[in-house]
Structure formats: C-alpha cells, structure tokens
Image 1 (tube, one colour):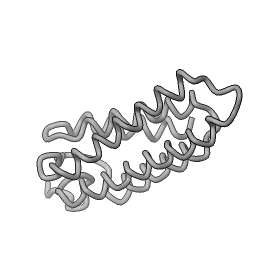
Image 2 (cartoon, helix red, strand yellow):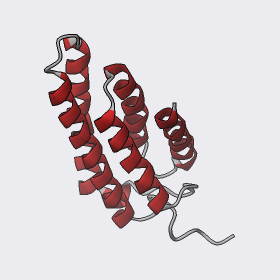
Image 3 (spheres, one colour):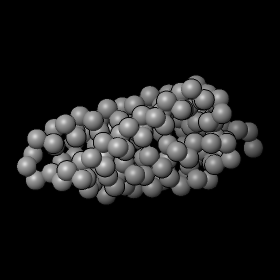
Image 4 (cartoon, one colour):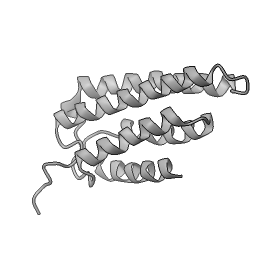
Length: 138
C-alpha cells in the first residue's frame, strides 16, 4: 500500500506548519487569559497554571520548528489539511471559551498531542487526534 503524501506530520514542512497552528493556540490562550483575568470569580491558581501551560506550549513549538526534520511521524491517519483544521478549531474553542476548566481540559489533550510528535509514535498521534476531536465537541 503506497504512503499518503498528504499524511499529517510526514515531512519537516508539515511539522513546521503544525508548529504555526500551535502558536495560534498559544496566542488564543494568552488572549483569553488576559480577558478572563479581569473577572472577579476567576481562580488565580487555575489562571497561573494555564499561563505556565502557555509557556510550555511555546517552548514546545520552538522545538518543533528548530528540529522539524526529527519530529516527523509516519503512519498518521489524518491528512495535514485536516490536522491544521482541527488545531485551528482548538484555537477557536480556547479563544471563545469562558471556562478555565473547559480550556484546561482541551489544552491538556492538545499539549500532549504536541509533545507526542516523534518518529515511531504514529499510533499515539492517531489516538490523541481522535481524543482532541472528541474533547472540542464535548
């Protein structure tokens, strides 16, 4: 069976494109945290934890950009275009959410997905993509 040339993360260029999507997620998180921090009923601890997650995500996307050729993943079921769409939907979900708990729930899956990009981790990536699809529809 021939390989799918449009499989997500199958080459360094695709990994760099996904890093750009993660930058959008981090930017969305930053924006919503600034907006929610003005509300009286926002937990300082939860907000601080999400700020820390934002910094970690930005560090990880830097790694993806700097080492894209070593972050490719074979056997990913989703096409690159569909993964970009899913990550853009994740950024919109975060940007439009009013609940730190909901943001944290989705961000956790998105972050673990980002960390999983490594050769030989196709099954892990496939699972986490399916989880993220479920999480943002929940």
